[in-house]
Every structure is written in C-alpha cells, then in structure tokens.
Length: 314
Image (cartoon, rainbow, N blue to C red; front, top):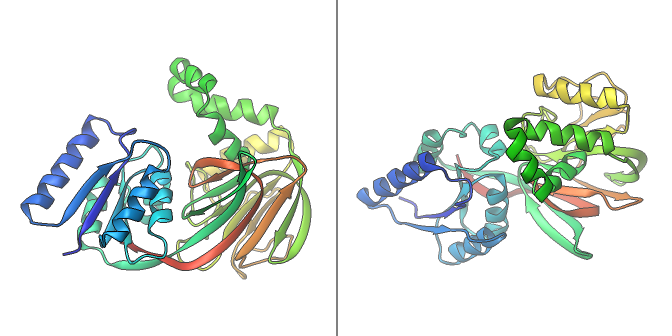
C-alpha cells in the first residue's frame, strides 16, 4: 500500500467536509495505511509542504483543496518520484470535475485503488511585483478578462458586494468588469508565428471547462498540447452572448473574434496554427494573468508545455 501525505487547505472547509476528512483519516488508521496530514497556513505553503513530503519519500501527495492548492502541490512534487492525488475540497474544483472525481467519496476511492498515469504540465513565465516569476500549472490559465475577474474577487470592494448580493455577486462583478474593460493591443507568438490582435481573453487549458464555461472542448491532461481559446475584442453584446453561449455548449460560437487553437484536424482557426506547445503574449500595457484559477501577475508571459511531466493517481 502506498504512503500518503495529505495537504489540506482549511479555508473552504465547512462542517460536512471536516466530518468527511475525519472519516477518511480514521479509515486509514484502522487499515494501517501510512499517512500524514498537514494544514496550510498561508499562500504557497502547500508548495513547500509538498516539496518536503517528496523528500520524505511519500508515494502520493494529496492536494486536499481546490485548483489553487493543486497547482502549489504540483510545483512541489515536480521532478520527484511522488505522485499527485486529489481530494476536491476547494471553492473551485474544475480539475477534479474534468477527471470525473469531483465527488469526495469517488475521489477517495480513486486514491486508494487507482493507478499512476502521466499528465502534462504548463510552465508559465510572467511578471509580478515588477519581477520575473515562474510557475507550473495543470488545469487552466488565462490572460485578460477572466484573470482580471479573479484578481478583483479578492478585493475588499468585492467582499463587501458579496455580503449584499450573495450568489449574484459573481455575475454582477463579471458585468461590471466587462462594461469597464479596456482591451489592449497584443502580440501573440504561436509556434514561432507572430500575430497582432486586440485582446479580450486568452485561455490555454488542459481541461474542458472552467467555472462552467465550456471553452476548450478538445482539452485533456495528456494530449501533448495547449488547447487555446482566444477571444479578440468585440461589442458588449457579442461578449455577453459569448458568455451565455459557453455556459450552455462547447460548440464554437460563430463570431469571427473567437478562435479555438487545438489539434490539427479537430477545428480550423484563422491563424492556421495547431498543436501549440510553446507561445508568448506581450501587450502594450500590463494585462492580468491567472493560473489554475489564481491571479498570479501580469504580461508579458511565456508558456511552455512539459509533456508527461508528473504522475497522477486516477
């Protein structure tokens, strides 16, 4: 039986989830499974805990949280023998949903009875605090509108709005940012080919859906490419229709401003570029960047695909 290190983000834990974890840890102890539990206390804490767990030769390091916790754990275990495990306990569980383990009981069964599989990672280089930074990611990435939203939803103003509007707060934030969004001219290099566009939103994903938006239908965690959704600037009406559209279907909306850049033969795009493994985006002014649903910094940004870079238990 493998040994397990559980890294738990306590922030999204409610009473039901705490009871679930207690049952899990009791079961492991009763069945003499080697395991250890550690709770995160600050940002990037999960990465350092995961790195230490890998040095201590834990077979599986379990990211017990959302997509942000998973990204930190992946950064900690990269280039080690430890595999990634997932318990979807976060606010955002898009990665687990894509893998079909978004239900806690199913995710735990997968941890106990699953096998190692290889998965791709993205390597991003960006700017934060005026300095060059880098990070791995494994689910979604974004430049522009969605990254700006993720930055805004941690602000004091949004937290105050959330108390008043409750479940409608995210929709209200989205419309507020959309109506006040200033697109910027961008130069995008895809597989060494350069293009200039007016950028609204770009996503390079390994999963099919992010926060309910089905923008990368051909994406997967081990297909050896980035699946890119690119939306150039358009009218407010087109932006609203596009958002509504992708909550319902993954079919490409028939707007010239929207492109799928995926595997050759799957979906044509006006750039004539397919199977992207490396790309970069530079902009006239700094534009927000997100990785695995966390705002991390600003453009310019470079992305490199790392094929079959880590093991995951599924």
